[in-house]
Image: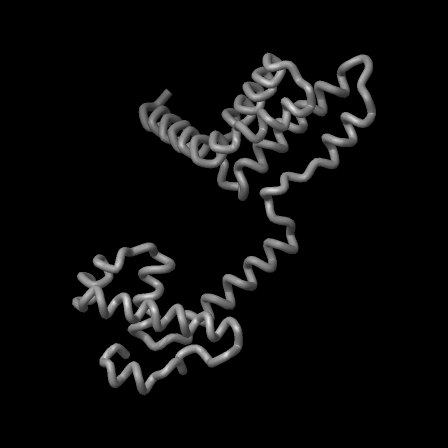
Length: 196
């Protein structure tokens, strides 16, 4: 094997391990709990979990997976279904219950559309803010900068940053509820105070 090929495989395995640690491991207890509610023996739960992790480990890439824990859960559920179907006597309720299970933490397509529309509406409201106010709100609320970092970056006081965030959030709330158009939130008072 060429050294570059080995290096790329190591990097791919490292990226996969990080993805598993971030997307799947935090949800492992929920999946184990779901198995336990199906009255599986602890060693059977361990075996199914191990086999599910092995299936993930054989993937060349995880780029096609949008929701890691849901993907992992579907693997685990399918492994359990396959095991139940191989058994000699299986209660039909067990199979129908497993097949009809829906992960309640994964939003439905309708909820995903609603979330996306709300996101687009908020982003449009932010875009309608005065330039300085918009930039400060974006840095604080979207990019997660602290008020101190924003003040240093823009060369203004933290108090001015705080005031711009307050004005921006208030304008967004009013725009959301339809009270006042965004960007029209007291422009005269803002100019007098030197904040706009």
